[in-house]
Length: 148
View 1 (cartoon, one colour):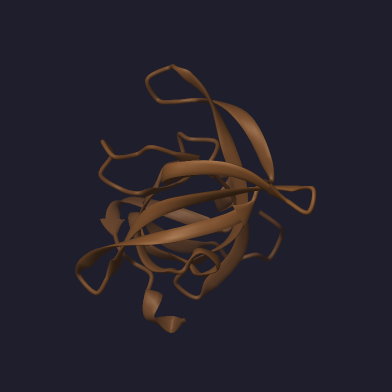
View 2: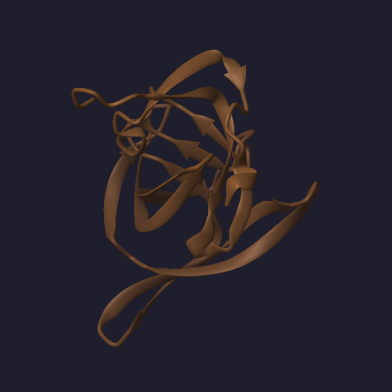
């Protein structure tokens, strides 16, 4: 945190948006125990266009209260070896995208992973939080996503 910077209070879970991917409302778990962030993605396929590596995938989000699948594609920013909470290492594709929480918007790296067994399709780790927020582990949904 920089001198004079005020941290925004968020809960352990928040509604988020990933506008670059067409996701206007997606459930996110804030996890300070995780270094990287992860997005639930299925049917992941890599391809190359004009010498640039890309990925296409499907993600599940909410439209109102209804689940909705969205077809997404993005340039591949990186591939990283990620150690999951169960201790297993997995090589994952990384994309860079905008994240919105409340009135805050910034670029983050997201790893693509099958999170079907997890409660939240989006996990936001320490790297993405970047000293912008203070987390209240007893609170949920403190930020108003409707500001965008």
